Each structure stands twice: as C-alpha cells, then as structure tokens.
Amino acid sequence: MSQATIAPANIKTLADLRQRLGGIPLERIWFQPAPGTATEKDVLEAETRENRLCELVDGTLVEKAMGFEESRVAGVLMYRISAYLDQNDLGICVGADGMMRIAPGLVRIPDLSFITWEKLPGRESPREPIPDLVPDLAVEVLSEGNTKPEMARKVREYFDAGVLLVWLIDPRKRTARVFSTIEKSSLVRAHQMLDGGAVLPGFVLLLSDLLDHGRRPRQG
Image (cartoon, rainbow, N blue to C red):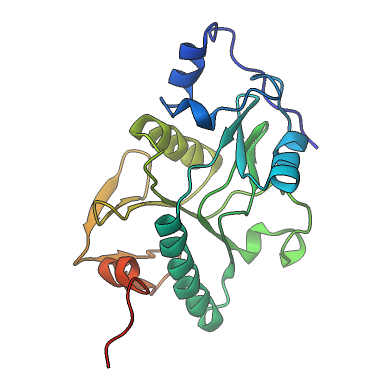
C-alpha cells in the first residue's frame, strides 16, 4: 500500500492548508491523523470504523462532500450508464464508494466512474479496496460543501492522471460542466443532452431527465 504524499513545506498554518485544499469547509479536513501524515490505511479505517468516505490529498484526509439529492442524482446516472453498458460491453461503472489511487499518494472517489476493460488488470474488476486505476469518465455531483477551487483542482488532477472526460453536475443550478480537456469545457443546461462522446459512444441523456427522474411519483 503506497504512502501518502507529505504536505508541502509551504503549508505552515491551518489557513494555508485550507487554501491548498480549495477553501473547503473546515469540518471536512480531518486532523486525526495529523495533516501530512495520513495514509491509505487511514482512508480505509475512516470508512470501516466511522462509515465516512475520505479522499487522501497531500497526506490529509478530506471528507467527501455528500448529500441526499446528490446521491439520488448519482444513482440515476449509475442506472442509465449501467443499462448502456448492458448493451455495449465496454467496461465497468462504479459509484461513490469506488476509491481509486489515481496518482502516488492521491486517492480520489468520484461520485461515478467508468473504466474500460482495457485498463483493468486481466480485464476483471479489481478486488483490492483502493486499486491503482484511472477512470475514463469521472463524474462529480456537486454538493453545497464543494468549492470552485476544490473542483478546479480535482479536474486538473483527473486530466493529469489520464482521465478522458469529466462531468461536474450541479443539481441546484440544473447544469453540467463537461470537460474534454483541462482547457476545453462546455456548459450543458437542463434542456440539453449529456453526451458520452468517444468515451461512451452513442450514450446521450437529457440533463433534465437525469435531474428530475425519481424526484416525485410518476403520474398516471
């Protein structure tokens, strides 16, 4: 199991640490273990002992921002992509507890990830709790606890690691920001389509269908 990256030397205060992590709420930054000393073992213990999902960033446990509505949206998207994969056997889809080591000392947990068979050792789903994997598609459903600098850092890290497509879905604004590269993105509004592009060829989904499915009983 790889060790965490020690916090950079220019972090001298809590304010420095918070800024580096994207100005996130302080309650999401864990101080046990001390920032700069956390490892993947601590990530797993946070899940098993306290039922909390934490990412590992600069040797610090950062609790994942989550909420009921965000979970619902991610679940609907998981269902739609899984149905697509039943007809197009391209890889696997994992949800918001699918931890991945996308770089040494960096564990991220997208709300949804799609990984092609070609990236999977032996073309099988890995059994280790934190595999060395980089998804082809990484989806983040934004919560109130997420900040713009935090998500900008995540997007940069995803593309640095080799992710091909990133979706940032904002249920409150009813929009999705689709990144095909770190520099190139487009805004999808509720009446427009999410498109899987070359990563999920032929997959399209009206954003309003994703955001509104399951919010209220169906009529008739």
